[in-house]
Length: 322
Length: 88
Image 1 (cartoon, rainbow over the protein chains, first blue to last red):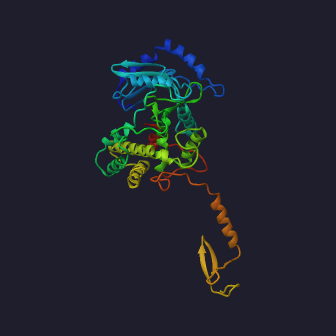
Image 2: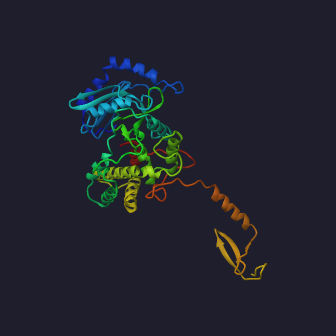
Image 3: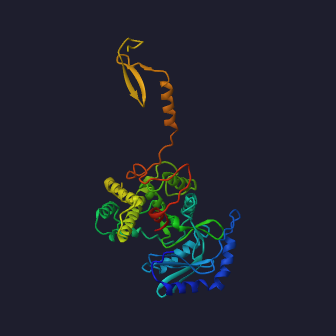
């Protein structure tokens, strides 16, 4: 796989942590029997004999060592007590979230955690929209544990927009950003929430794996916390609204979420009163990501990336949300 | 052509691809052979069409990107769409 940075020293340390197998194996055996749901076919992919880099981008390094994955988290984020609160919140939902097995460790100032390996979504197969929707509905329907931390507000959007250079596409994204409520732009505080649930906080299809028992689970607990559930539907809603996600796929996702009793949208009728602001926000975030990466690679926007910028134009034309 | 009922003058209009004759005086309508069936068929097609999925006010007027959906066969997402679906 493409390696973004030379992190061989860090790689070796992650492998070492992964191989502290005496402890891990013992816990792992207990976990596997827990996850082996009676109706799910055992789904245990063969372990590769050598440690394998699964992800190496944006300062994050994820290494698979046998049946576990060891992750060095992004260096520039807060991993103090807030992160511990999120990992312990995740531990309360073992059939929805694949939580942290070991750690966090401090490796030369980097936060490192160990989880069980799960097989990611294969983009060449039909996408598990229904399963994702049901996992989110289950998470959103759970009682909010006392003392659960709040999710981080959607701070990525403002960070990305602040990195935009000059150009017509950049201006289109900035104009759309200007229509968002101040708290999303990083000014002021989030208004009182009408609905509050435990939310994943950064859901997309890369945030699901098949757990050791064969069922799908959510991964990545860095944004997990109390929040408005519509934000977990924001990415597919944004891609559908931009014309990038086929309506049929959106309907599969939304329909399954509603069938499973998810509280983010009304059970029937127009879901957009709840979805509008999160979907706008994600459309702007995705457009900013596309424009920045096209600029870095010195290329023009492709059809789908242009569709995201066009969505920003329509957001500006529509004006501030009601 | 004159109206068979009141002898008024009939004019020809085209509605949804169907030619109809309407009387200027009594507003009566004359349909040629097969035209009633054509209208009935158009109506049933309209009723059978699934309601379009709702979208926000700023939604794309039509799918902005050419989707390769043929008879339900799945085509993989790749390139920029892959990143939009699979990464933060």
